[in-house]
Length: 391
Image 1 (cartoon, rainbow, N blue to C red):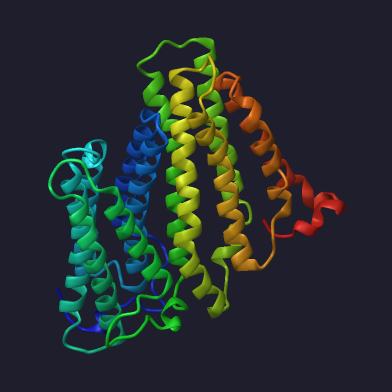
Image 2 (tube, rainbow, N blue to C red):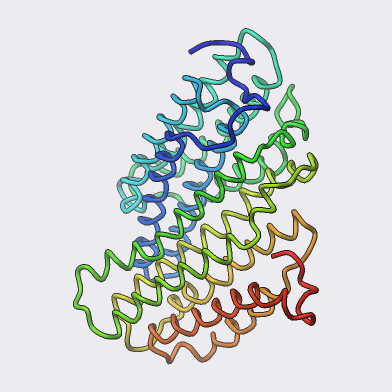
């Protein structure tokens, strides 16, 4: 591992394309998301779904922070590649422990989360030790705060057995809040704003690539379910609806998203870099909820729909639209009203849809998403819909 800041920090003229190792890194995490979706589908209680979403927030944070690392540092350098490999190993171990994280595998999951963060910080601080530079200070700030949250992750898994979810909730809060506050650290202060303004198109592409891959879980999870069931008409209808929903969400996400990649203002780049983890965790959580909902639809397409399933099937699409709208608003300053006006349609269904078969609820939700996409397509041609501007 070569020392020196110049050898590790990404050069301004470096390629913005993701490396093959980064793409392999994404696949590992998408597999973890699929497991979380299946866990959420299997747990019929509100607490069970909440625990699955808490684990999602942990998995997402590993991916997000590591992606920020490969945007600031050069992923072609050996120390950064070592960080990616260690993180992938931690992700694989965490994914394997996910189904049993509520029981005997809690410590494995906690260790798989904490270890990559600490190893990443240690590698960067030690590699950059020859030059006291802002790059080393940045790594030290991250290492300090992940050390603090790591204490609560480990405490939450001890003694081995049932995890203490309140400790894990505190750990997640520390990770997310410390990042929002720019990692204020004793003797070092906070991460300077201009470091966020160094974000490149590489970071925007990485988020887009991951969301597109994650959307595949909406059809992957019900595929695994239907492969072990009979191909009854209602079940097939639910399966096809999942496929259509995936395509509609893809369209909602990519519509005019290229404008985000073309931001030239340093101030807006910094804002996008700081906001992306939070707006995108909303969308990724939405994908997990939708995939879990379709898992249940394919497993039992007829009969009444439980309140828990309604929350997944109606709340998932609403979260996705809100997350995408939030990112648009914070970057462009415009509110995509033509998308948001369809959210009441999902809310109106909630009181009545409990008596509908799950496949009917899924179909109605897909129609609402279709209306959102139609608004994007036809709004520019209709003068009375143009005030929504950018999507």
